[in-house]
Image 1: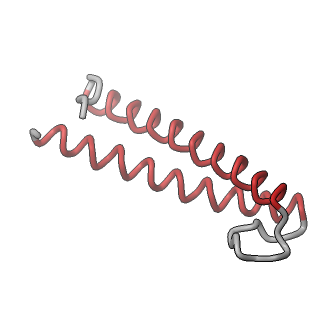
Image 2 (image 1 turned 120 degrees about the vertical axis):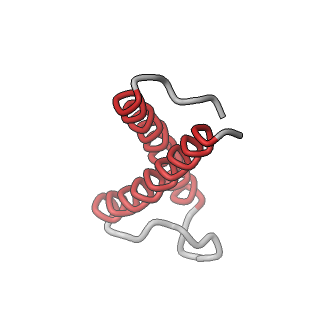
Length: 90
């Protein structure tokens, strides 16, 4: 792997990880605001229903995936703006 590919891989991974963390925290805050309860993060909790667990999985999964796509697009745009070409394929 050449230097440019390594830099792009690190940038893309960092952006995806950061976007995923922010999205998960935002989804949890939105869940608390909408449902007035904590998201069902612990599956061993007897108070959590399957409906609630599956809803949280769908909401948080969508938010994280969407944020990763947006983050990757932003990283690609920044790369193009800075270097004038598309990022290398990794």
